[in-house]
Length: 185
Image (tube, rainbow, N blue to C red; front, side):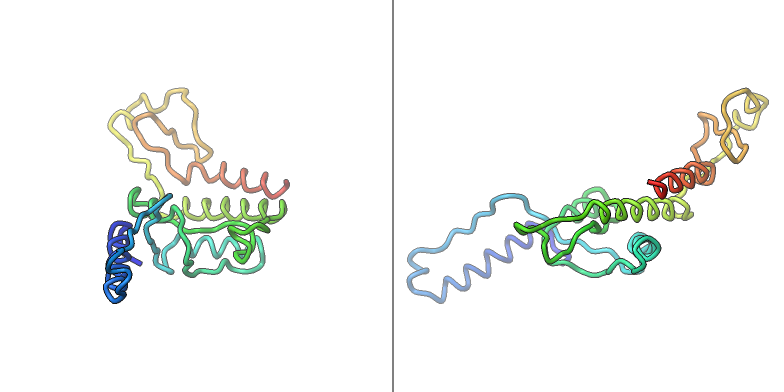
């Protein structure tokens, strides 16, 4: 954990080289290490970060049990999100991990629907947090008389002009409505 794909590959090659150096036959025919297929970097997120906490809380609400927060020993694109995109990430989805990547891997339609509800609820929670929210910042043009034009207004009654960013509180009505619509499916 905490090493790049290149660092892990070099460490693996060094281990193989040291092992081969102790074997007379391998000394004459040294092994060649080649990497095939995708390489996934290791990644982690703090257990107390709002993403896993919100995900676990949402799972508790939808499934009646919190999502398990822990480590896994298989590759995923989580590292690319964290390292390349500088975006917090978690691995979460339907199905029993014991069957993951096996011939008998399967998930139920109901569990998939409920996981979608967990993800929607998590998104709603995160978008409501101040650290993730966009703030509407009035600009000189939005505080002038032009801000009272007949352009559309949000449910909070403010006027989001093209000179200001859309704030999450203005969209809470939409998220709540979407959540209610999903629950009726």
